[in-house]
View: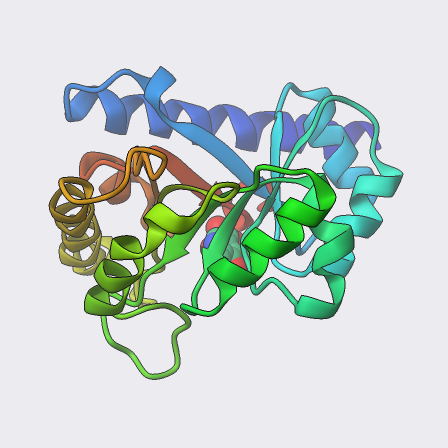
Length: 232
Ligand SMILES: *Cc1c(COP(=O)(O)O)cnc(C)c1O
């Protein structure tokens, strides 16, 4: 247990130092970047240790696992759903989640809206965008996202806070830069016509392999898993 704690502490320190350096290199304050620790590959003990080190935001890709860890962990934790919102679990997931990163189909928003109305919630969501156009990736095409935002004025409950994307895997993080830049440009373009409730101030982009580049391209949220758990 002690060894796990030391290792986590060192990994977290190093990730935070890299976030700070990337922010500074692009003239930003690291306060403008939120670290979401992705705990999908670790057990509750390790996730709890991370919370003990001061991490406040945890991300899970499966609703079932989010619910399980939500139940088991102690502390003021903001839960992020970073994978598909499964309809049959949404009623239980929605109240536990501070931000859904993965609204990836047009029919999802009216459906979340109805559920939110019923449950008395104002869920915050990001539209997941498939910038690279890879068939295997989740996400809306850019033009579909634009259309969706055109209709978003009808949403009284759901708040569209921004956009999310995943870059295709590549050992060279520079290859991800155009993807992240394109997400930021899309956001800047659609924000001009978006209804006031769709603030579009968040860009969730950057994972262990490419978060520094994402920060340089404007990420406000980075989702980091493996870099925090190296050597455990
Ligand atoms: C797993 C996952 C991450 C974290 O990936 P790492 O490479 O382990 O940092 C980030 N975002 C999403 C959507 C994920 O599924």
